[in-house]
Length: 61
Image (cartoon, rainbow, N blue to C red; front, side, top):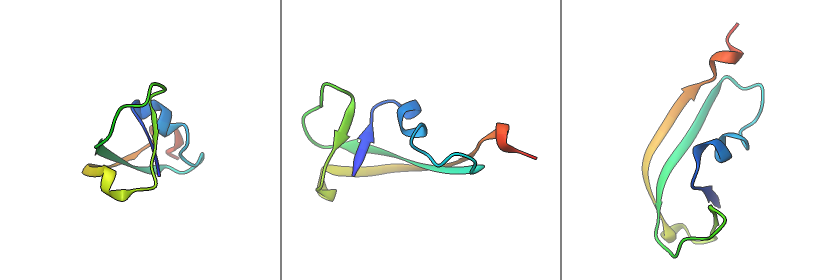
């Protein structure tokens, strides 16, 4: 699993051309990484807080 501090970074990894997108907001329980992107193989290091479902208005027909 990987996570980014900035939502724009995560959005860049979403599949293009899909109108509805889903993003988790989590709390990462570990030392911060200097690059702003966290990679972990341990689910216990993350605490999900919110699930955001949104659409891209640029893809509406």
